Length: 259
Image (cartoon, helix red, strand yellow):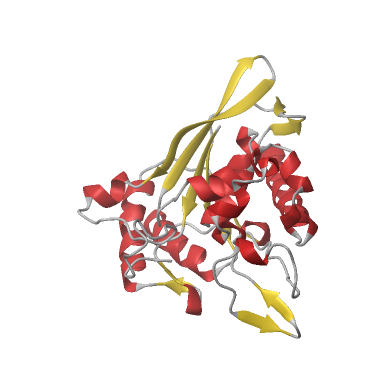
């Protein structure tokens, strides 16, 4: 089986849709995906992913197999009160409700904080981290991965420990239109690594496509291997540079880039 994990186009976060550039990216993406033999298409419930998928679905004259709430952008955001030890982990906290500080998302924390704590690198010990202790991150992660595994089981691959029991071997292709943070959670689960190095060590550009295959080297036992991560060759082929979304400033003094 082959999985295509696709990030939405350049986002207009305020209106949960795509920018003008994002719509162009989504149309270019559709030219890549439409000729493919994709069995099922799953789409996040959020507007920017649904809008991105709409171009491919229109080109294929199809509707989505399912609109999935568990595929929305990973929602774990800690709630900090004054004096919380994690306050120094975020460069800027602007939102405040009823005395509670609401920082940016998990992958916005500063490298100078998380890289000093070995538990964030460990495939299991991140669950004992300060961030998990002060947020709903662990519960959100488990909800996403259990929902993902239930879907994979419907297609013949049942999670058993760190591998998958094959109940129906197949070469079907499944497409998932989702979000950067959510994609990192799925890859973390499939590849058996902590989500933190993925959130902070990768930057999947808008409309990027990650391709993951099953490998059944022993009869009835499958694992997943990533063949491509964040591929945007369709944009380059169309003469379009990838948008900056998901990245931070390349140099600190460049105020034109995301800080």
